[in-house]
Length: 378
Image (cartoon, rainbow, N blue to C red):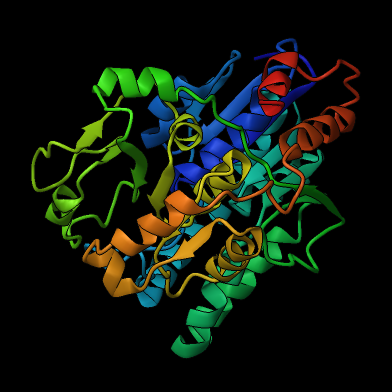
């Protein structure tokens, strides 16, 4: 990559939701603007499946996210998360001048981070604008745990919060925490890529009867072992579709699809969704107007705002922890199939707003790409 005008995107390795959110922005940037993506190598394949324009990928990790107890992706291990965060943050800050020099050498004119803080420090030191795209910060997530752990943990939170304050601006996505006291804030609404309704194609491929119900099932890459998967087989006339096979082995009504579908496509093609209420899944459900059944999540501050938004929208169906672990979903599915939720409670064109602000920040007058804009009207 050479010349001025490039944008560097940094994405946390904590879940695909951040990648899905950011790629919606990346795909709107005109191809004449060079794009560099810096992230953990484990995400490279997912980027390749979702990018609709050229971009270079390179390895970089500066945050750790939240660590879950073994087999339980609905809870956060506070002590483990803080210990790992302190180590990773300190290492990244020790190398931040080298990262700033890389930005200068690559001709980068702006940085967008979703949601690591250290790239914002690197941007500041490189003398270019650095923007945070977020609905929470790791300081927000860690602080309740740190207060219980003592001074060392609170010091880590303060250092992370200080790094966030190096941002030139914040693109605050909804549903989100307040994000006050970081930098000037632009409210962008939901940053989501609406899916394509492919239910006719999907139902034909799976050989479903007209009366069969189709449910998108997604509980993430981790923490699936404690679920009572075999209960799903008892649900006559209900078929589940997802990206990861059940740990207990094949089931007649559980179907695995590949990367030719996106999560947003499955959300738009289903009669209901059963999933953890992460940012991406919640927004995909709301923009598709498809009810979402979800478990509680403990020790993760983002959950309360997602839960409130889903309830206010009218299509969110919270299950108890026991019901979700045991997959006792009958009454929740019955309710979901009867619901007809309305539009989301926030504007859903946040990706376009972020892309326009980024282009303005580098003095690029090109219009945003029309390809993704058209999908936003689906």
